[in-house]
Length: 122
Image 1 (cartoon, rainbow, N blue to C red):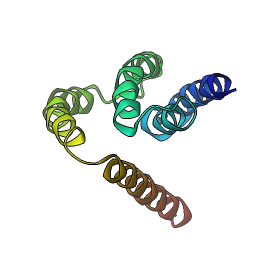
Image 2 (tube, rainbow, N blue to C red):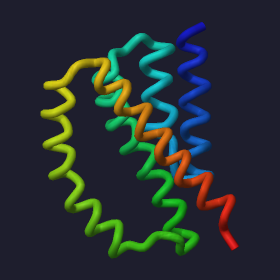
Image 3 (tube, helix red, strand yellow):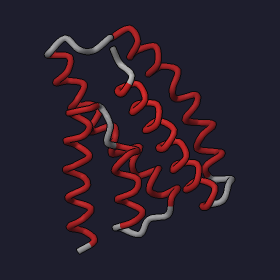
């Protein structure tokens, strides 16, 4: 049953990635930790590799529609590995509970900001 749920979340993550540009962290990490029993750091680490595949397919399709700002993608993409290097060291140095609470807080913060932006858009 857990593997079936993980498969469903993988499909939902891919759908969410293509539809609204999310999936990896938002759905994959919880699915990996809850349904497959991975630790938080294992779920986050596994999700990083999964995101490469999802992002490649999604970006390829969106380039075809002319929706990708290539300059922004290249600049942010080139600089992001510096943050990842630091983040990996920190993730392996702090407690599992800290990672779980940090992930939840970040998800709630972005959910709040997106909901507020949508509700008060002209």
